[in-house]
Length: 183
Image (cartoon, rainbow, N blue to C red; front, side, top):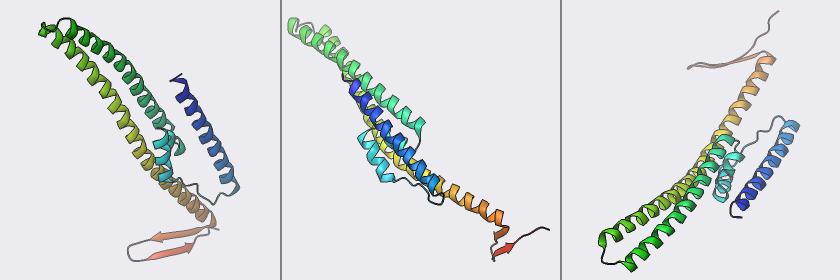
């Protein structure tokens, strides 16, 4: 049940994201002049709510899948490390309560439990770090997407100008605009 709920949430988020992409593609085909820009703050909020959602929104599907894979691996690793830690800790408590005079056995049992605790904390901090990376990366990805959209728009405008036969040039000392027609 604990694994099914996050998977259902992921599928729901992907469905809304793809529905939004389809709606935006329809709007873009209706007016070719408008550029679809993505709000960097909006992608950060999406990634804060659900890791990878901001990357999906800015169309970085590969990064989104890597982030989801990393965070889910961290959660699974933390779960299994926690199970191992509780078992080792219970063993340490039993060893310390039944034979408190045997300090070598008690210390060895404590060291085993402590190693499992450190492993669990490593997985937890790794998951938190990946989540923070997801938030920062979604902001940067949205800005790159917006920059690429502007560049593509400028390239399309330049192609339209070339079709008209206009020539635009810039030198350090002047800016020129000319009409070029070949007969």
